[in-house]
Image (cartoon, rainbow, N blue to C red; front, side, top):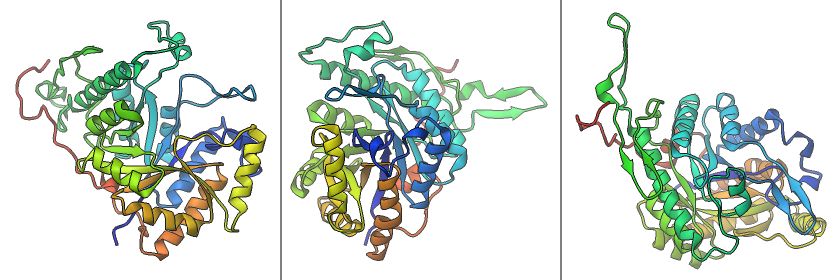
Length: 377
């Protein structure tokens, strides 16, 4: 049996808006480096492929209860976890709407160097006018007619710029020849000369090519524009099916050229019915049932294993699980679900690759500029 791939999405105290009020949460530690290091290390103990760090340009809010929750910067959290882990992939989210692709490229490349080949990147768009007001360089309409087309078009350009910048240094550009005083072979640095509707970037990068060559780009697909963007520019696409048939349709729509993971929000307890009771209690504290783009599961690890193995028949490569409460439901994944899948021969017993691309079965790509001798600075 081919092994499943498993990842987790980390977001504050968990994916339920009232997660911080659950006895299994640690809300007083959310702004400490220790908390984030510990949850990533727990994910690594469970042999998971990668963790994603959620981010946004405004505070997480609940309009019904007028509660606002802050967050730490995703890329910096990933950098904090890099020297404290050794195998798990680290994938921060960043906005392509208000963040320059040059800064993203060097940041993710630096993370890949710091983690020795375990970085990834999850680009996302930011459509809220309040986010744009933080920067003052553009305005976004309150009632957009077709804002998705503009934002995802811009995101596509951003991904292309970032990928070109990662390739703007050839792998052996650093020569560090002390006798001649030559640190870099300038003939192996390349202008990218990108000219698009949204960006004009000359390059090259200031950071050497990442250890993976191209850290995996992971995109969440929602709606027609998001599917087009994800399928065209990502190495791995996250989808949110509600059934096996819907998952099969999404896999077919995306195509076989990229990996496809399904997202699920999960609440886990060994005792039957206990997870649903816990979720219902959080719903009551929040004033309304959890509103989620992804399907919500509340049950035992064995029941979740049944569901994952059934959904896999749709052609999915793996799953990104969103713990309802952190770290409670994360430990349910790592200490109960993973052993259950291992007993069924559906999950690995150890890490089998040193890089995130290796874990995902993605080859290291060749440098697009290496065969060219023109355009060097």
